[in-house]
Length: 510
Image (spheres, rainbow, N blue to C red):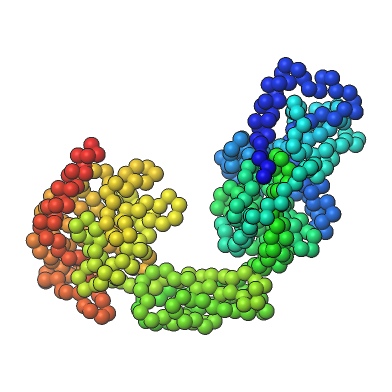
C-alpha cells in the first residue's frame, strides 16, 4: 500500500535545502525541474476528464464561511487546497455573502526551466523540490499559457478491499458516498467514473468533506453553512452506475472499484397530518411522484394506503412513513408525523422521572425517550442533535453533573425550576427542586390548564385550584382515556433526602 506524504512537509524540507543550494540554479533550458504549483481546479482536472463524454470545466468553490474554507494546512480539513479571501460583497445563489473561495489544488509538477521562465510571474506559485516526487503532473507552456497532464504515477493502486455506500439522505447535497476501508492520507482530488464512460470531478468543501464525497443534482441546492451547491455538472449522474471512485493523493492514484447505482431523485414529498395517539387514522399525501414510480409504503407498525395511515394503540411521539420504488430506479422519500396526547405520564421523585399515578412504566419510558429539551432556571438545553445535553438518563435519572457548551446545567444552588418538553406531549412537565423540605416540589401543567386548572404538590398534601377560586382534593387519574393528572405528592422523607443531596451538590461545586 502506498504511504501518502504531506506536500506541505515536502515543501518545507525543500525550502530549507534550497536556501543553501538552489535546485534550479544549474538547470539548463531543457532540463526538467520539479516543484509544486497552485493548480486551478479547471486545469487540475482537464486531463483527468479528457475523453469522457461529459468532460467539463471544473469551477472554483465559493464559500460563505472562511473558518472552514481556509483550513488547508497539513492535517486540516481541506489539506492540499489553496484559496483566497473575498471582500467584494458578492453573494451566492442562495443570497449568502461569499467570504472565501477555494481555487484548486497544490500539487507536484515537472516542468522545463525554459517553460518555467516563459511563465514569468504567472508561474502558479511554483516552489522547487529537492527530489523527484512519487507522482506529479507534467506542465507544458505555449504562448505563455500552461497546460497540465494527468497525474504521472508509475504504480497506481487498485484498492479492492474498500467499498462504497451511497445514501440519498444528507445535509450536504442530494447524495453522499461513504467509503469503508478508505485509502489513508489527504484527498487532494477525486472523481467517479460511470459505466458509460462519464467522469465527475470532486472539489474540497462542496464535494470532499472528512473522507466523504457529496454532491447535488439539483434537488437540494444549498447546505447548512449557507453555501450554494453547484449541481449542473452532476445532474446527468442520476440514474448512472458508478464503476469506480478514484482518489488523487500526493503519491498518485488509488482506485476503488464498485458497482453502485445512483438512484434518481425528484422534487416530491410525503406528508402526513399530526393526530391523536392511541387508535385512529391520519391523512397521508404523496406529491410529485413520477408516473412509473412503483410505490411501496412502509409505516412501521401502522397500516398505510396512498391516502391514509391507520394505527392501533400507538404511543405519543414522532413517526416516519417511507415510500420506496420497487423497481429500484428512483430514490425513496420519507415524511414524519406526530401522534400527540395531553397526558403527562411522569412525576419527579427520588431524583428521577418515574411513572405518575394511573400510568405504567412503559408510559413513563415513552415520555423519557421522547424528551426533546429540558429548561432549567430559564435556560433551555436540547436533548437531541448536535450539541445536545442529556439531563435525564434512559431510566429517567436526573444528572446533576450534566454540562453544556457554556457550563453546568445545574449551578449547585439546589433551587431549580425544571421544564421537560417531550415530542408528542402537548404540555411540558414542570417541577421544582428546592433544598428546603417545606418548599413546593412539583408544579405540573396538564390538559386541564386549558380550563384554568393547575396542580401543585407540596410536602404535606395536594390541592387543585380551578378557575373561579374553588378548592377541592385532587382527583385520581382516570384509567381510559387518561386525563393527565400528573402531580403526585412525594413523601416528606424523600423531599428531605433530595434537599440534602442538593445542598451537598452545591457545596461540592462551590
